Image 1 (cartoon, rainbow, N blue to C red):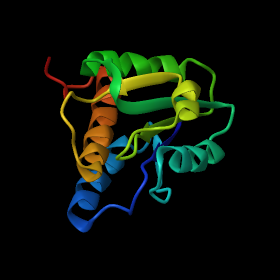
Image 2 (cartoon, helix red, strand yellow; image 1 turned 180 degrees about the horizontal axis):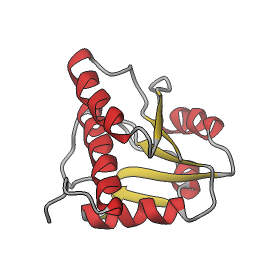
Image 3 (tube, rainbow, N blue to C red; image 1 turned 90 degrees about the vertical axis):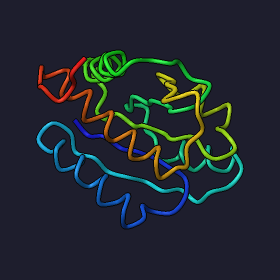
Image 4 (cartoon, one colour; image 1 turned 135 degrees about the horizontal axis):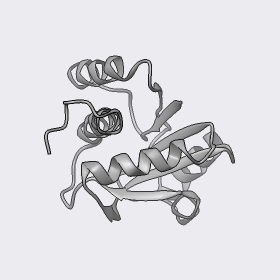
Length: 147
C-alpha cells in the first residue's frame, strides 16, 4: 500500500533525514512512503495546498494535538482500518504550526494526537514514521514492539 506523508515546510534536515530514511528502509515491502512539503502559510493556505494533493480514494489521517489520544496498538488498528477500507493510499497529514483548516479537519478519516506536548515538525516527522513502522510490526506480529 502507498503511504504519503504531508508536512508543511522545508524538507528534512540531514540528521533527521538520515533517521527517517532508516525507518523508510525498514518499511519497504509493506509500504512505499513518499513525502510532500507544501509551502508554509496560514492554516487555510496550507489546507488548500494539501486538499489539492488528496484524491477521493485516499484514507486521510491527520496528526493534530486536538486529535484522539491513542496507544501504539490503537494506531496500528487505525492502519489496519485504512488498509481494509479499499482505499488506494493512506495519507498522513502533519498539522502546520498554526493548526489546520476546518476543511482539512472535516476531510480527515481519522484525527490522531501523537502527544499532549508540542514538538517541532522535524521531530513529529520522525515520530510519525517510527510509529508507522511500529504499527506495521504490531500488525505482522513482529518483535519490535514490546508491550
